Image 1 (tube, rainbow, N blue to C red):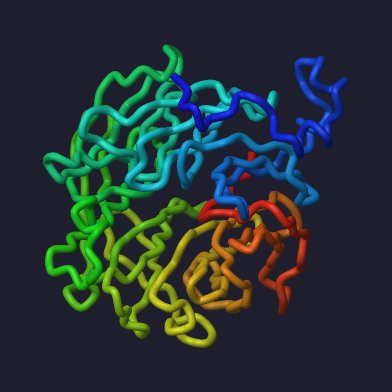
Image 2 (image 1 turned 135 degrees about the horizontal axis):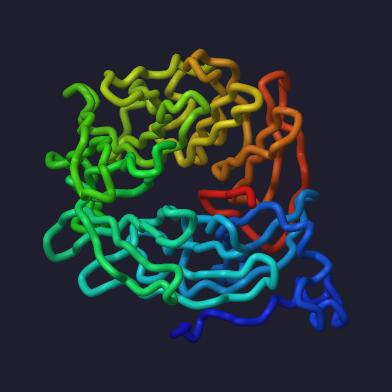
Length: 369
């Protein structure tokens, strides 16, 4: 059942842009221009999931019951899922072609959504990172997309506070970022946590079996592994955050990992790790250009590396966080909490402005449809 805060209608902006005639056809005229999705907030405090065109303009928006976070695209369909920010009580299923909300998936029992998920088996099943608030354990919830996203099971992440998740090319191995922090810590003012247990785990989701656990060396124990992306070579790129209330600005915040090996820290970015202020908000890869990007909204910058982990450049973007490959010219899209969009590339000395809006403030993540 949809919450009262979730709108099943297009926003006023989308109605004006598409015109009344477009609403009478099954595929509105603006639908072919939808290229990216992001959660966002407005100056009035409203939360939404927004569709962005190739030109950077908003195509439609849909109300969210609370702040949104990550998104998952369902293969072979126009559906996408926007997850509530940890601790999330909902995940909203949307039709990106019609610009409509399809349904809201409620969090189960003592569980809350942890901000991310993905589809497996060609889009038949949705896997979502969750946290069991009663047992303080991480889990992956299984939802049947063929049957109205009915929750049909769950299995452990073999760790605490899972956040992001990625699927290896074999279709059965998940790599999960256990952030090491659960809901117990969300309300703690001083985040110098003695019991953070962050790790990277590989799990056979079909057999519900732990295959490998990767932990960082003791001097990096305060770092929380948060976001993941895969390179064309199959390496995992991990983006980290310092869990302490006063971050150690010299600690590295990104590494590469291949199954069965040790983590390989990416090179110190131009300007040093201090420039990222102890916080990476997103990781992205543009395989066409062999480019890795890590964003730091707290550091107001985007770091660029090649796929070996060699540092290329650090570019200044105020509150920049959302990252997405664009599929063209080796360019990557960056969204900001100021409502601005930029493109960056390995050869550009400065970000190129794509556009800005006066209403929406983009949240952490942006995905390309």
